[in-house]
Length: 462
Image 1 (tube, helix red, strand yellow):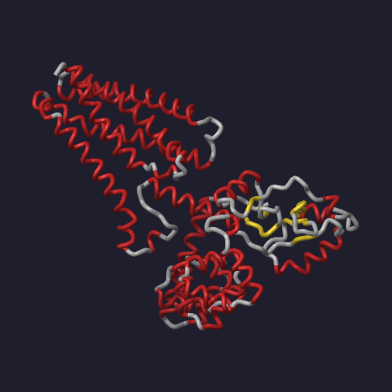
Image 2 (cartoon, one colour; image 1 turned 180 degrees about the horizontal axis):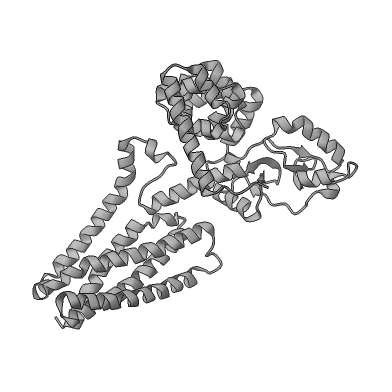
């Protein structure tokens, strides 16, 4: 059993990666190619990829060419798509063919998604007929589906095979297959009828057939299933891989756990960006141009800017009230800021719960009611403190009570809005993460100011 990585071990590995990156850059600057090659020999492919990504563009291709062919392919699959594309543009035609041909089909399909169509056509022409057919199969499915991320490299067997025959077949096919820890049993029409784990195979007698030891309760996904759903299936059932079947239940591929980790990271990044009001199309944010960065962020900011003008209009409409009691303006930031924060908290926990399906059993009504009660408790606690603080600031109990009561009402409103709107977005088929914290904050600002002035008029009798 592998020992868990402690923070100290993790930090040491991070320092080691940084050291390798710095040493590699220094050796390449000095023109010491043999030293650079020796430096990379004991380093893992994923760490080499990170070191190459940190190099200047002119040095990346030099460092990559220091690797032997087998290691170069593994490193290339770990590189960021922008670096992959940059290297392809600098490779010779034979180098491109060798690398792309040997990549796993799912990683190759992911690379082709990022490349211009003209480059993809050229690369497809250079592949062998078998690899070209495999890649075309994956590219034929919609993006972000199980069909697009699966690998067609798996070991398929018949029920009549004995354990001895199966082990011999594994020895023959293992190098051509991405996974061997699960073996898939199919009938004459390629329908998936059972699964055998490598552990079960090793523990069984040589003369036993697969039909006797295979598991018939199969967990599988369809080619058109969303990649997030595929990730949830692997996570829920603690699988290392999940088979992918078509509409006729024919086995067409397998999605492995390493692909799922990439998906979860990608989806989490997109949700975080959306929660912050930033558009995301899957690109590395810190490797895109400033023009693209501004374009991704400006849309939400323009919407929020226009929405905030409503707040100014409401304040302008209350000039008569403010002329009689100008001190009321001092508490507007307190109320709107607190309401926005409460709403953002509610929307964040609900959106995360929807994405992880933790709250699906509760239902929308129960979730919203729970957040309403939480908002009421928060509002009462904060409202009492705000009332005392407001009185200490200006010495008028009626104004202080107006502030406290408004804070209770705004906290309840913010909690309900923050928990309900993600469900509304989801019902329309939209990503709940679009109901981002900036949007909730701005909406609560507008309504909160209106509530505050209405309560102040009523309590103060103005």
